[in-house]
Length: 192
Image 1 (cartoon, rainbow, N blue to C red):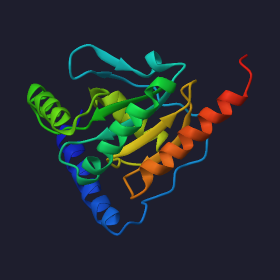
Image 2 (cartoon, helix red, strand yellow):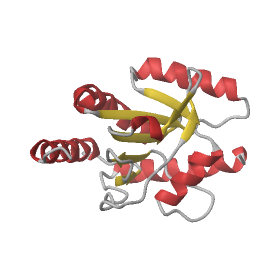
Image 3 (tube, rainbow, N blue to C red):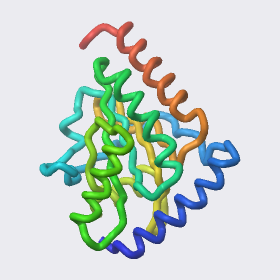
Image 4 (cartoon, helix red, strand yellow):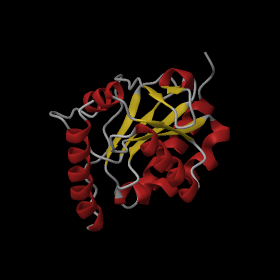
């Protein structure tokens, strides 16, 4: 992966979103439901790998973030709360860190330390080039950058049902309302 270019693009994008988040204005509203999916296969911070396929049958909230990113630090406590509230209802949260650095093991240690500091209990992985490319595609970004945080909501079949570039005040409430609506709808629908 072109780490230097990735790091600079992510830092600049996060900095611009920090200014937008400070104004309280959402960077962009979430997209409408689509049949487009977001498949990923990333290394887990505790070894092994994390894949989108292992969450089939569950609603999945995917957050791409960095320890250095102010808006990421704002949304993560809300994602921990969402994970704790909805996990028993078939909702999972996965964090994919876009931690910059040339030394992979140092980057993983920073993410592990950050996870302890923030009380993150959901699974965490490290961004790789394939996941980077998939995020650009699903977010419809052109060029060599994307926004952090980027939060995606996938339905039980892996289709993207919402996209959130950046963080805005109240985003967590919007995500919770979407999850509540989807779970109510599923409860009313007969099983196939």
